Length: 143
Image (tube, rainbow, N blue to C red):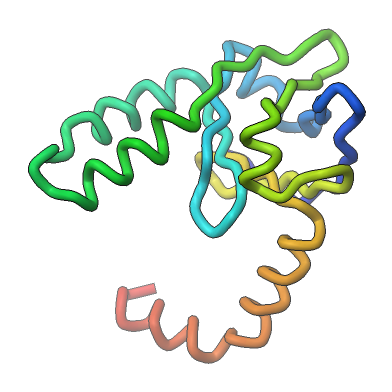
């Protein structure tokens, strides 16, 4: 399970260090893709493969399904961490997520998200101030 929040910097070559506590689960390879809310999603290769099959099975006759398939597949990049636990984030993914130098890597149970620090600070503040509203929505889902 991926949990926690870690601040990192992206170097001039587009590399970012994966937090040490996440590396073992990602050692078999990983996929980075455009995420939702302006961040990047990172999946262990096995989890990505299972998710990719589900996404590919969406009905291509529905516009929303086609758009989601494009977002996830066209933006995906296979990555392998180097000996220091770093991965290269392709320029198009850094641009999508607004990541220039400062980034935050967070664990979200089955995936890792990479945010620009500025966007993460905004997102976290937004969620923290909307706590009562979110709690009410989750209560209706049985949580």
